[in-house]
Image (cartoon, rainbow, N blue to C red; front, side, top):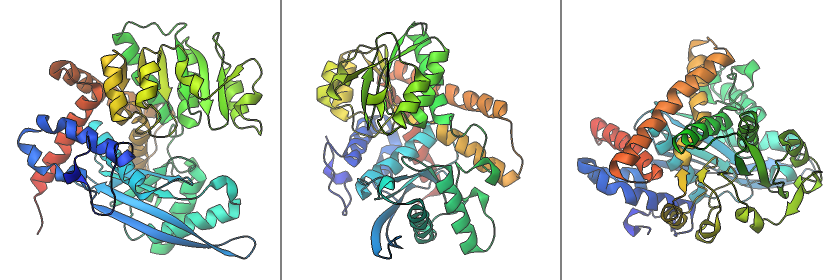
Length: 427
């Protein structure tokens, strides 16, 4: 249930909204906060939400307006950190939820960041490259009043990439009169980006998945894996699992859904997903309906698309051993309960896909020092941060007899509220 006392005046959360999902997750951990529970309002209200108008002169000479957002959910533990997504369905409420999940994620991994997120309501496929650049630069200028390497550091997310980050860095730098490489992460390596950043989120999903498989005594040799979403996260995780001996039996993205019980060729799936025909053009695979994807028998399910994908109805019919959340917020609260009752373990997004923000942290550190690490160092450091954080969550989940999501939220929210308590309320 969504506690109405936790809502904010400019949104009306529902049980099916991303913000409503986040509030329900917070409600569950209040009994575990002890003396810190009196500060829970810090978690249920974003610190700052900025809505900006982005007027752009299009290639045909007309002027169109796009709406942009940047939400800083919490800055108690450090500067805001979180991606920017370009999508036609972006809303303030969605960005608020994504920013809040970044607060929890950064605290769960114990990174020195708060949580933030941004978005522009645009379909990148329907604008030219020149128009996309103008949208990015104007958006960056508009949110420039609240971002900065010690204030709030954007990064790539859905439909944004290293080139978008390069435009953002250049625009911010031009506006302040000097190169500021640390204002964004996920940049091209030639502009101060980090080796290993592109594959970091997918690698993190893989590392956590391997750890859970060992604990559940599941051999990855021949294990069946279904993946929803085949961008950087889903495709990289799939590739690594195949190298470990697993089979990718089903893949779904915005172009369609394909299935092969013997295993799909990941390289060919990537090529097909980027082609005009999409996944349905893939040879050697059966095209199935989007709904049938949720009926595929698998040992591991990786939702790596958008939030709200595993509904209660889908949770009741899932045929899998455990779920590793590559996307942010893919499982609805009621679905969480159903999966728990069915004995299906859900590894939550706030730890499962934290590899990306962890390597973003490495990039931020490298930019400040102007000293860069090898890819081998990046991968080793990622594993050394991610796995101990997951082990702490797993241990608390056993100790308190709660789900992994609840355990992650308990650890993270305690850290956020302790920081808020120590800093005090000003004035």
